Length: 393
Ligand SMILES: [Fe+2]
Figure 1 (cartoon, rainbow, N blue to C red):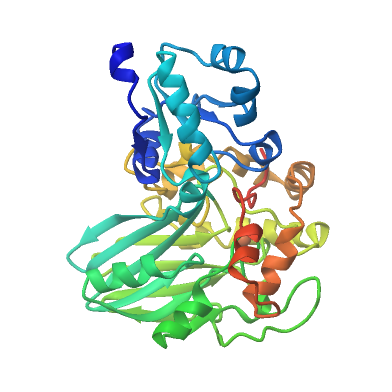
Figure 2: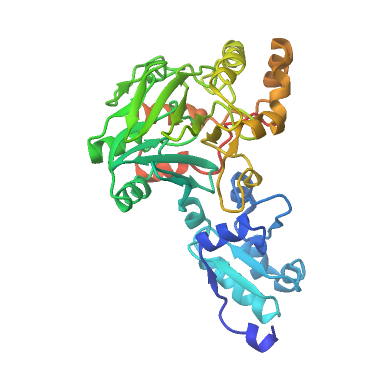
């Protein structure tokens, strides 16, 4: 590109175009111009190898030459700020210096709000749809068959689910949370209010683990071994305590014999859910060990597709954005499973690799069982950044 061509206004890149580029590992070099504190709290993350640099906006105002000199001139640059204004300014400025700069439309806020909807499988019996919030590493699902739909682990904003269910000519009949989440506000109670479909959760999670106060939301208790029918698909609840006391894995059995295990935080593709988010890591670690050694293999053949509710790194998603892998692959490639060899090895691995406990997670669990109702601004603040539900290693 010539300097003359570059001396036009910087083009905008949408959050969904950015996500597509991150999945395909074709994203440009990202220049984040927010202040260092905001950058440290959360930033855009992609596959291994993505370059993200923080040069605050005011550096470009105070000393333009030296700030510009820190940006590589021979690469495409995507400038990101909180809302859009300062990134547009910096991108325009960089173009006058011959840098091929674009800016993220709507800033990092629009990245944080991006929901991505994709099919996991489309079959004669129906389909499984995946709805993710890439900035948070949160994943949820819709099972649709014969005009009925079940949502599993819905995220806070309900529109993507309502739109997807309607687009497939279905009616929402069941809403499940595999457990009461700590990292994000569930869309379950809101979907119940909006559609009348019951919201299912295990009763052990309907008590705040730290406050010991009972839920005030309307929910229907689910139980180990219980089954529900969504069109031609059977959903079987498998109680799997440890991450929370009421965590369940949900096994979907399709009429063609294919099986799908919605694992919540029970197991991820590369890690598993930490047992300390109820404030009782020491006590819940042996419970998790028991679940992981006794409650996964009996139900699983190698072809069962594992569908977790989080990823820690985008490397866990394939190029089409699906966060899914057959159990035969997960049991060989999820390195953290090696520690299941003995309870003592598991215990020291788990308790030695717990990431910092985000203080807002206690409050989010309150919100999720109705003990607190945050404003939209408070909800945004509580959910800021990426989940830390997995063990660090
Ligand atoms: Fe969780």
